Image (cartoon, rainbow, N blue to C red; front, side, top):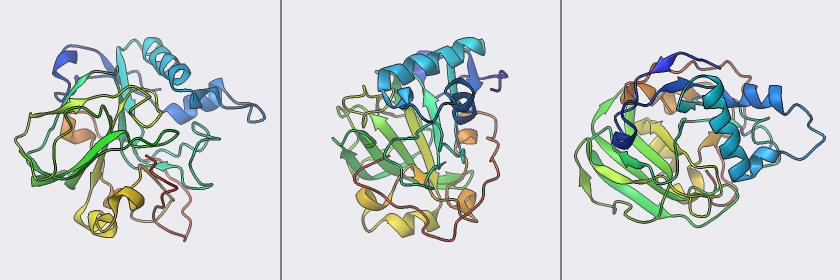
Length: 246
């Protein structure tokens, strides 16, 4: 756990002045829930939410963030992920349900869906094409939002515009409340744009160049760059969905 405090991301105006810390949730889950013979309590959204809040408390922070290129095979064992498909492609910003979210980039909404699948769904989610790409983010995906007030495809948004609120488990795909933010390069979007509902996920298989396809979104929010953990890659497929999962 990284106890260093970060400036509050500007995309959460209601949380201005709160204390933030980076956290590697998979390593923490391995330490606290090491017994793989038992069921995984973190697959229950409200148990996971209480645990994530306790992680923030132990670091002296109000909220935590992290997870880019983190192998989360232990954290989500027994969840929807196929074996080996456990590299987290974005960052999670662990904030309460109902938290207002702003976009850090100006752009056009290309795809927006109130996904109703649970047990690994996206919940309310949309993809923004950046007007002026920054830090490698030609496109930006927002996931696990509430269904109400999602921006519509074709909408042009100025930087700092409201784009929705963080969803409850019953509408965010069955996860603990958090915002999943994922940068996509132009190349990554080309690979999924024909059917983003089926092809675009928040997790992928270890592959060379994965960090180039899905750059670190933390600098877009004024957060320190994430540390990409080394992993062993598999010469299979880049990413694959199993239903509407995130």
